[in-house]
Amino acid sequence: MLILDYLNLTFLLIQGLIEAVKELLPYVEHMQCARHICQNLQKRFTGAIYHTLFWRASKATTEHAFKVVMKEIETLNPEAHQYLMEKDPKTWSRAFFQTGRCCDAVENEFSKSFNAVIVDARKKPIITMLEEIRLYMMDIVYNMKLKGQQWGNHICPEIRDKVNLLKKAQRHYQVLPSGLNQFEGRGAIDAYEVDLERKTCSCRLWQLNGYGCAHYVASISFLNRDVEAYVDNMFSTTTFRKAYNYRIAPMNSSDMWPETNYTPPLPPINRRTPGRPTTKRKKSTTENIGTHRVSKAGKKIRCNRSQQGHLSTEKAPKVKCEETEETKVCVNQNAGQVKQFKI
Ligand SMILES: *[C@@H]1O[C@H](CO)[C@@H](O)[C@H](O)[C@H]1NC(C)=O
Ligand SMILES: *[C@@H]1O[C@H](CO)[C@@H](O)[C@H](O)[C@H]1NC(C)=O
Image 1 (cartoon, rainbow, N blue to C red):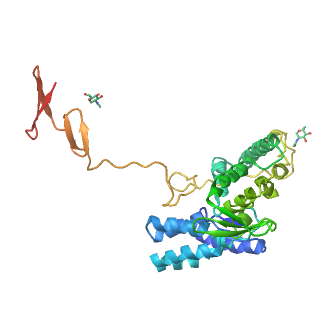
Image 2: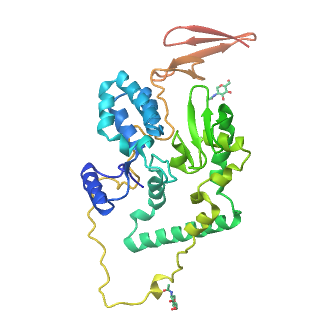
Image 3: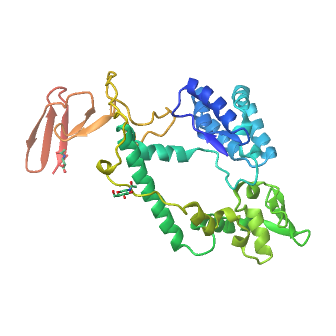
């Protein structure tokens, strides 16, 4: 499975890349990052409703559910519907993803985290950059290895947490047995066919993510069996340890590296483009850009000097106060207003 992240790439490069990846890896499923499609959709059509509906369409696990949401989008705005259909839903909706992959992700977050990690290393010369990435990887692989050692021989803790959430969600489903291993998971408005023998649920989520859905967890609990025993082997701690069963070799410092006959590479000619060079990934306009402040222009602000409110754009009015024993009388000398305070 491959999810392409378009965010860092220019349009031309994308076109080339899509073709190149198709050519190099003809048998893998090609997908697009749903977040990116959502951002493009929101640039064309304004309204939070598009955001909500799009994610419902993207996360729908069955073609039926997908069609229901798309119908809603069509009624709302036929153009938005057409725009999404042109983007090829097979590449961004779970409803069309192939099963048995143990991955139901529709976004490409991991390339963004990678980018965040290498952002400092990226501005350095090539050898230094590669060295920094190597040291980072050495640390990550070691820490993952260590983590895997501490876990028992069951399933990975993150998946266990997810299964525990499903165990809570299962109470919304009533289980009606049909065969010894076949059930109907019936909710308030929906019902699904669960087959523990074939390891399928007609909502398809189990086949997609490899650890289950509420209906299937309800069926297993109905039989008083251990839910974790049904989790795909992909999520076992043994598989986790196998994935990190290598290490990145330590290196001597560069002055100990063997000498070669090649001429050492010269630094590239420094061509400075105007302005400060950017290092951070360019964020889309629809991305959440940290905290934002609201301008105070036009708002009334309280001011100690004038003892009264005035607009932020105006100068604080000059105020002269006279205090007696009981009251304080202030006169705004600009406007001639009088204000009395009780002491
Ligand atoms: C580090 O230096 C030692 C001694 O010169 C050498 O035997 C070893 O192969 C070097 N290691 C690497 C990874 O180059
Ligand atoms: C304004 O006045 C109040 C009470 O008189 C005082 O607590 C506060 O610190 C003053 N603020 C400024 C910015 O001087």
